[in-house]
Length: 492
Image (cartoon, rainbow, N blue to C red; front, side, top):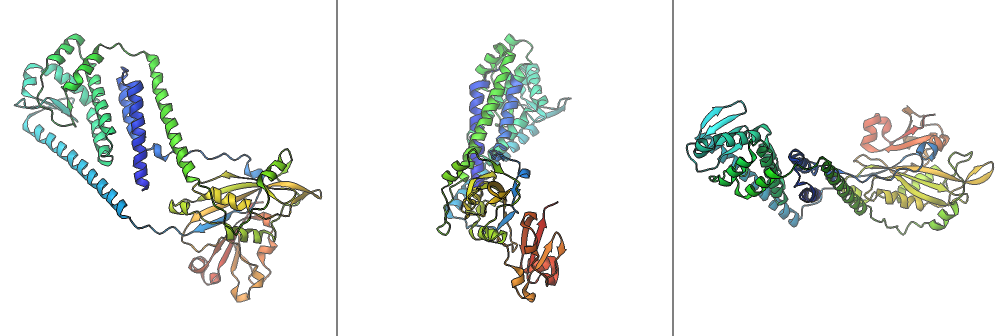
């Protein structure tokens, strides 16, 4: 369904772009600019759905804050859901429509080739001139060929050849082919027919500009009688529905140069629409997380945040705040309570969420906020668990309890490896033959000695990664049979 949502967004941008063109630009005599706008809006709409609303900028540089080791939440990728009958029906109808559009384009191309094969081919500097021995169809140009029927060759050869040569030189056929190619994918959207019509009329305006005598050329258009049109792929010299518009544009006074600013206005309008759609998408992705009954948020957050107003908050202190039971219990708390959001799992969302919070002088948690997020429920889940922290032992400076700001990076990662979300229990309590290998900064630690994790100051730990089973043995051989704890420390 993600693809269907993308197709819908592209269609929305096309409708808005075409509406702005008709409202603000279509009456200008900047034909080259109009052609460029129509083509760029067609192609740009394919990229606009990928615009993401900017995330909140961190309020404080992380380097000045006390940063806890990165905690990693891992989750197996979701199993591909089964295809529902309605989804299968929608895709079947879409595939049939796309196939029909592709067949129609192929038949039109084949018809043009058959017509060109009927005439006499003459090579010119600008391309090929094909003269037909009948007047059943109107003269036209396609890619690098100009096709002129017998009547036009006898009575109107020079003005029609000059007109169609402009189409060849400016490669107008490629514009129409682009629209037809898009119609295969977006066959359900009629807005592309309107784009095609606008491009065709702009092509005629560009070719009519080279008319040597404006008044004589206008009379010629009024008196001209054409044969049947070939297909919608060609630039046909005469289309009755366009004659009035073409003559009106011939006599129209050139648009003032200052009106070029209207193109800037239109582009700003499109940018605003794109940001609005991206913002709405982000809002819909950020659903409120429900608090499990097993977690009780201690303290009134509004009261705590209000109590911190106007007070000094430290970043570097003599004695850091401590989670009840130490860092081992902190990681255990995070591992027990952090859950990988189902929405993020379904969308295959990975990344790091950075949460900052203040451990108050009373040990409560205040001013918890996401400094860097990834959306899809991950930000809310990280913030929820941080607010659920029990009271800490407050930090101290000169023997006095103080407010200290902390930063906790939480890495959400989808993979199939056997990583754990909690820090292991004390290694020294395990039998010697059951102890996992500990690797600190690439150096294997003595398994018979004291627990190396307890002897390592928590402030020096940058990240902890636990491998089990085949992954551990694949990386460390038989030594990893009981698992491996990889620890990276911060650079001093």
